[in-house]
Amino acid sequence: MATLSVSGLGSGLDIEGIVTQLMAIERQPLDRLESRKQEFQTQLSGYGQLKSALSTFQSAMDGLGSTDKFKVFTTTSSDSSVLGASASSAAEPGSYAVTITQLAQAHKMASGLTGIADENTSIGATGTLQIDVGSSSFSVVIDSSNNTLAGIRDAINDASDNAGVTATILNVDDGAGGTESRLVLTSDETGTDNALTVSDASGDVASTLSMATVTGYDAQDAVLTVDGFSVTSSSNSVTGAIQGVTLELEAAGSATLEVAYDKSAVQTSVETFVAAYNSLQSTISSLREGSLEADSTLLSIQSSIRDEFNTTPTGLTTSLEYLSEIGIKTERDGSLTLDTSVLSDALDSDYDGVAELMANDDQGYAFRLEAVAKELLDIEGVIETRTDGIDTRIDTLDDRIANMEYRLEGIEARYRSQFTALDTLLSQLQTTSNYLSQQLSSLPT
Image 1 (cartoon, one colour):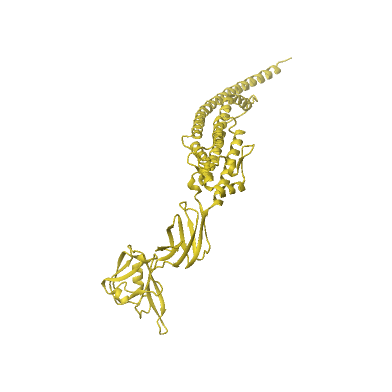
Image 2 (cartoon, one colour):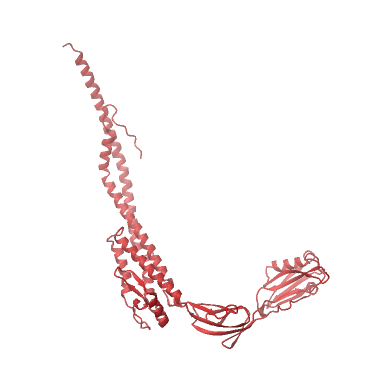
């Protein structure tokens, strides 16, 4: 609160200086409260840094925390112009010989009606046009308002129950030096199950249009063999033929497909894990020397994480036991280092063993560390409990500070009132003294 301050006017008494010094003494308890509040706020900031580092560390387990995370594969085709592929976690390593004899194709039909100069010329027919797409069908009403090729096209494309067909218009040579328009219908999906049929539910629109399959655009399924076994698919994206693998058919021909573990992806995940752990340890070390020095909760968190590194998993089916066996070593300062050549050798010799060592449900290092991080970051975990306690203390200090500031405002006002009264009194005494001096000086010697 701003306070009007005036030095002694009559006596020359330094009211402002005296009040300032007295209030500095009075504010000492308040200063201690504010200093304590700042300490708590610094601790909160420290725990915020710790939570961020723990969250990053937990995220680093995304690629390692379960054995399914190790089910990552690469697919390599000997001829990508013939065959492409992708693999999910359900795949298994293997080599497959694939021969494609026929690609799946969408059915396409065009009107045989000649003499239609352009898309806006009436075809001279009306009625209800029915279009079948495989086992599904829908109908459109064609009357005098839309019995042009453009009108029929729009009626088909705009139908709310369109079963999967797209209508377009081609402008082609009429054989006499001019052009004429044709209505073209194309199934949205490939395969014989999506073949088109056009008929009249009423009227003569279909019979007038005389729709027929465009040469070379019959509805057909993809035909291929995998390791000599026949496969038929309505789509050129073939799933199910090879477990966990989607084949992308590009052209007729033969290719060899290799499905292998994506070791580079695993190595990247391990590198991310090591970097995140080192970052976490660096943050903890910095907090121990700064805002959370000698904090028991921080020490407990650091200990719980290190315990997991020092606990050898049991009951694994692999002979691997220690992280050092896959290239992860602990240095003197507590940080981790990764020897990628050791990791690569381990993945080559015992890929499943590396997966189990890191991600075995209950025993894997990454699995257990992720569980620890999750527990620490839980809404009812030790960090949240600790920060809630600090928040409560800050709230209590805020109340005490507000009350003390209010009391100090009253004390300062009282000091100013008292010293202003003293200044007035001294001024009056000075005036009286001056008067008496004048009177005394006027008396005859």
